[in-house]
Image (cartoon, rainbow, N blue to C red):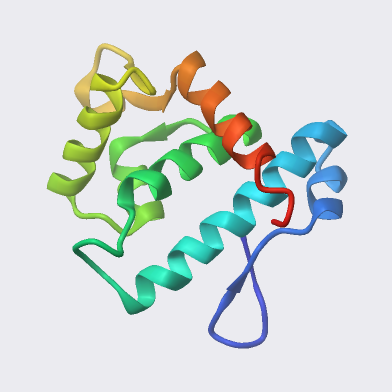
Length: 134
């Protein structure tokens, strides 16, 4: 995500991903996922909680972007990226693990990384590909 001259974030453009050496298919997926995440964050600015806030989708998109960029995320970093507090992050990660969409690696609790499972990654690729207008 990049920041413009105003106080709002704009999604990454396709050519930004290519300039970082990503494969064209991954750069396109990254750009779409980034735009979708920006739309969710924009919606969350108006509807912080309850029905309209979709913290799980925001977490899935953040994990997907981290996977494409090969950036490891731990639960704390995921909380910062998705604007969730510690208990909400734990609950969201537990829900994703229970659904088979995410997994946690590492022995040390402070250094455990969270990422998408193969099923979660495949579903996110399919979901983003199904939205050609992004």
